Length: 351
Image 1 (cartoon, one colour):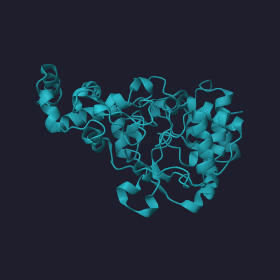
Image 2: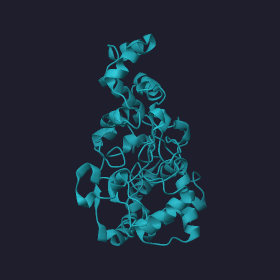
Image 3: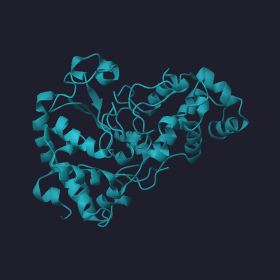
Image 4: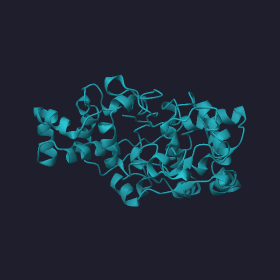
């Protein structure tokens, strides 16, 4: 199979429109691109210096997925302070839970649990998404209730099932630590406070962009992926997966109903509050069971899958997406090859 198959045979947009025909009964697709100014802050995405040649540029323009490179324009001191705070259990009420407890950077930015465990052993209500590449998302949380990373930070900190605390409780602990006070003074010129702590955490999270082998292929490295993975990508586009999973984050830039072609909540499973998705934010009936489409970057590392952790393996997740979102029974070989392609989206330099 040769590179450029999409452009020669049928564009990814046509494949997406075909998938849209399957989805048309439903639905509710709301597409919001990330503000380009936000990307400019990150220094990620397409850059002249990352494009190998005109052929590489042509390839990128023909594909639904946009390559990313490591971010620039970040303050390294803020990143390191944010990393420290991200791993600091003092940000929780009982001093036992940090951001990294649920978003383990060595495990793909997740904890591998169906429901995360917070202070006092309390179980959360939803499967924790990966923190990697969260800066590329147009909204934060499964239901999109936070508009950006800055808004997102206080969610886990104040949630009684997660960190169950407040900045009024956190700041005295930080200000009692000489090294922490020095770090804040060196960077911000003042002692630890809520605004600066959030700013540092966000700066660190903005650094968690993970270029993969597939990005190298998009940028012109012919040997970055093998024939099986390339076939998996072709099938990913042909079957219509790219209708929702595209762009830099390969997802994360639109809301979609869970159960487009086939009802997921058909009475055979109990519906929890978290399963209502965006409805919990807006109260609109059309938002019931609607969620932010997750990124597929590092998806091979982030099992179990979906907001309800109902798929234990990547193969099972691909198979379910075919049935519930696209209305197709994917052949076993296609499912396997798509899963192989998805593994090529794993970042090559995870932190």
